[in-house]
Length: 158
Image (cartoon, rainbow, N blue to C red):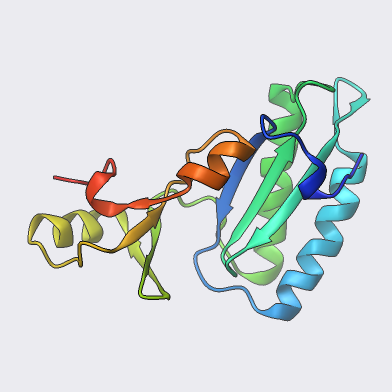
């Protein structure tokens, strides 16, 4: 059952899917419509999940579930991944490539693949103030406090 993202508790489980390119406003509206329908019917072992989504920074789809209401099962998570794959196919976007890393520096978003970003860090070709999105955060509260982190303090630092 869909609920507004803001109404989910801070301990809600989140999954972050990053697009391999910037999503247009039209794409975001269409994705939001399709995500609302999916989430409204999303179940775990035939029980509706209390869930939501957010589309952020023109690159991210964030799914969230209130596990205190009903826990997301492996099958329900698989359903969401298959759904994200199908959405991506429709608009020629890959939401599942974890080697793509989005950075933010002085208000500008830049996409790197993991290996090229590691090389830039090794050669000190990245500004120290550069931030990256830590798409491994697991809760809504972590999304607020630990999603955008310094590249120098991240797992990428050589």
